[in-house]
Image (cartoon, rainbow over all chains, first blue to last red; front, side):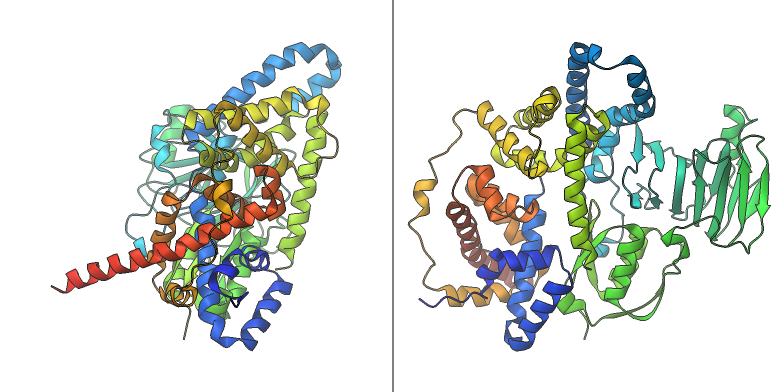
Length: 381
Length: 207
């Protein structure tokens, strides 16, 4: 019987085709573009095959552990690690061991509770079109004991995008560390930051969003801003990109006072609006407003420079921008959606809101899993 | 977009570097490897055993072994990921010693492409609705034999090559291709049923 290497089944199992769907690059894009040019009648088959490859990947990846399982597995591994440590402990020279441990200690704490819990652990799928009732980060959250703290440490050399349960996103820079409670408080949203991060916060006046870094609290109701609270630096810097932010020192406040200050529905203390910046001294707790001009001196963060203004912009450029600043990979049907263009200003919106806005405009659906985003749409006329 | 390939290379290199650090007793490197792979390993393990306790134990044991035997780990592991998956499969295999090894291999060689490929291909392509396709794939997974699901998982979710999958599953590359081919063929048959049921559903909607 005749054998068509470009039949649906053959495409779905072709290494070359799978590679294109999963890891598109200039080479294979060109190869399949040429193929379609020569065989335009195959377009339907290609589209269907691509969708099946994505569906197969998605469906065979459904059995990932929930957070409690991840924690359980790590705890088991860790307890064994330190059992065996005892046998080997006299191998290491004490001085050496001391040094290693100090740098490593918090990481271990983080790891045992949480490293595991985080980013990738929760696989969740949701669709733009189910807009009402945003899917919360994880149904599993509620099963975890109260007061579990989620810790994220960016050990990579690239930005790490963290999606919070309220829909906000945080782009954590290399070396940065972000922690927050697994079970959100009713009246406010709180995270603790060391290192650099860019925040895009969902508006919610009833639940202010607070970032604590060393002695500084940064409070917002919904906006985007950057905080640089690097361990090595004597200063913490806050720079506002959109909206309004307030900052106050918590060095001289007790727990109750911090709570009161945090819960106030209005922004108190020193307020900053767009493009304004402050520096907070870790030593004396003083907050100084900085001049606007010295741009770029503080940050080398891609996302802070990005205006997210799209005017008749081809979608591939839009997606490339998102891929770069959020360090995610976006898979979409280049054949179907390649011709689409987008008009939108998405500055200050959290990552998911951006995707939602784009998908609405394109009549598409999106799925996020770890740092992978899949966008499926019918394309544009 | 070429960047992604570079990333893949860097990623590979990083695994290697982490591996070297683990061999020297670096706990942080070990944590990173655990964090990076334990979820997908668990996912894969779930295709080998329905019992989540067995899978959890096996994933744990793979990592515990690596740490325990770190001084004796091979220096030049080609792919850390491949090593982990193969180790996990052995673990689960040990846990349930009646793991079917021969059962499906005998079934492999008989069936070939069904005669009516042309027709069903066309209608398969014609399924427009994404949700119908998603449902179809989901249905398929619940019906396929274990080893076909295993091969599909390693190929599509875990992104292993056919050669690597053969290495992990301990079968020939031809068998792996067969597993996948048979699974995809079932997709076609499965489709007919779905189409009919959705048609009935639509008709009911009319009245």
